[in-house]
Amino acid sequence: MNRARLAVLASLLLLALVGCSATQLAYENGATLLRWRATGYLDVQGAQAQDLDRRIERFLAWHRRTALPQYAQLAESCARRVEHGITRADLEWGYDAFHAQLEQSLRAAAQEMAPIMDSLSPEQIAHLEQRFAEDNREFAEEDLAGDPAARRKRRFERNVTRLEDWFGPLTAAQLAAVRRYSETAPLTGALRGRDRQRRQADLLLILRAHEARLRLADWAVGWDQNRTPEYAAASRAHREAYYDMLLEIGRTLSLEQRASAAARFRRFARDFQVLAKTEDAASRRR
Image 1 (cartoon, rainbow, N blue to C red):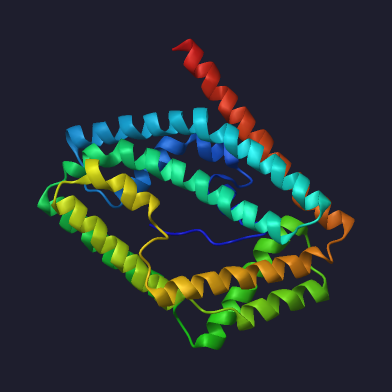
Image 2: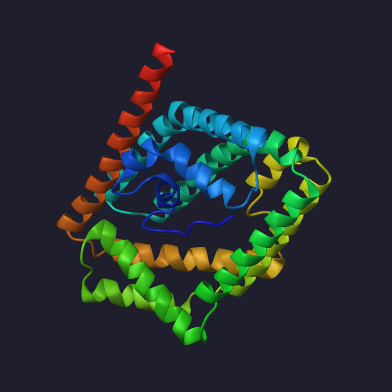
């Protein structure tokens, strides 16, 4: 139920979902990782657990076959755009591309999981509700702790780490741009926390009505819909402030920094291509 944040380009959101320095290792263990994550929320045993395993395997096969080639194309396009210089159009394109790719994967996952969700007992739904409550306490401790100054300081440090992962060490002027963003962009943590709880409540209603087959996919892809006007406005303002920061940094990137980001995008693209071809080969053998 967690939401990724904007990074370098808005499309980095997508890559962060599946990409890291150990992309292939993570994918090779994807079924185990997903099952571990799912069973942290769903108290399933016996036939339900076996069904969960089958559905995770099918989703990963679909993801390799359908989503990974698209991710590879997106990563290569990001590399070229970084090399040529980041524009606001690039950022808006990246956000839209991420949104479309995320929606496709969320819908596929929801459709695969819906039958299990419709089979949950009242006790299993209560277990899920308890896990949501634990998550919300952790969210408050990690994201809402401290006064606004402390939260802005954490945001500055977090964004410096993310940006330097892509560009290498930032210059003093680039660090100043990150600091201005961190100190002026809206703090949306409390609003996001309330929105998480609203979406969790909506999901629990779907499950108690045993309507997952009918409604789960729309719930999954509607993660940015039906927000309060206050949260919707704050999210837009935050995104625009992030764009402004990236554009300011983009104007001062050295050739080495551009090359660093482009090379990382292309490493992702190669990983995605290799993983997709692995699935193609496995499909031919079956």
